[in-house]
Length: 218
Image 1 (cartoon, helix red, strand yellow):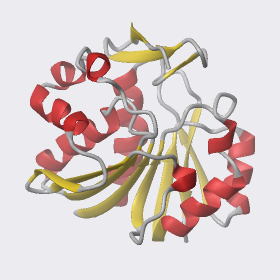
Image 2 (cartoon, rainbow, N blue to C red; image 1 turned 90 degrees about the vertical axis):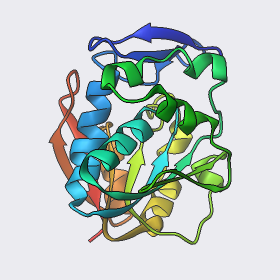
Image 3 (cartoon, rainbow, N blue to C red; image 1 turned 60 degrees about the vertical axis):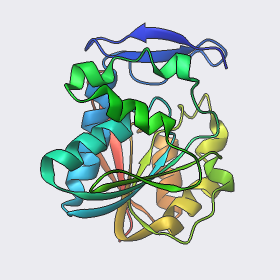
Image 4 (cartoon, rainbow, N blue to C red; image 1 turned 45 degrees about the vertical axis):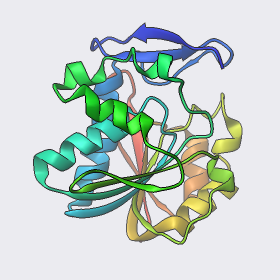
């Protein structure tokens, strides 16, 4: 997929995919959106020191970088399994300005992308990364997760990622009292999540979005 580098409203980069007419992040702020949805209402809402995370859509690596940064700041212990069937090329991720804006080592960001696929890699004392180069629809694992970062392209762009079959798998992969967070709060998504047994919370969205979703496995 051809991609174009863009700057979002908070100064952070994102990528625009002309073929889908879609961006990897909100144009209102890539870092702002990721912090609000996946860190504030995801990682920190778990209120645990040891957390297993499944990310559906590694993309630019921004969510992973923010999670790694928070791991170092708060002495958390994270196992981070990220799925990405279409990884970025080096010439694409090397241009992204996330590390500069977050005041963290560029090496941390590069290592997230350079790390090999299909094996556990300790990127810090308390952060283990396992990247899987495949779609969630083909993903199999024995692990269960405390949090799922569901960060696929929007339903109208990637319909196959927001089906009942996919969310049934998400339910199965969550631990009891685990939850899924996503930026998307469309009615059809809420109904599908509820249909597989998840309790849906509608939360305040990041800038430019009125709402977001946290779906709990009770």
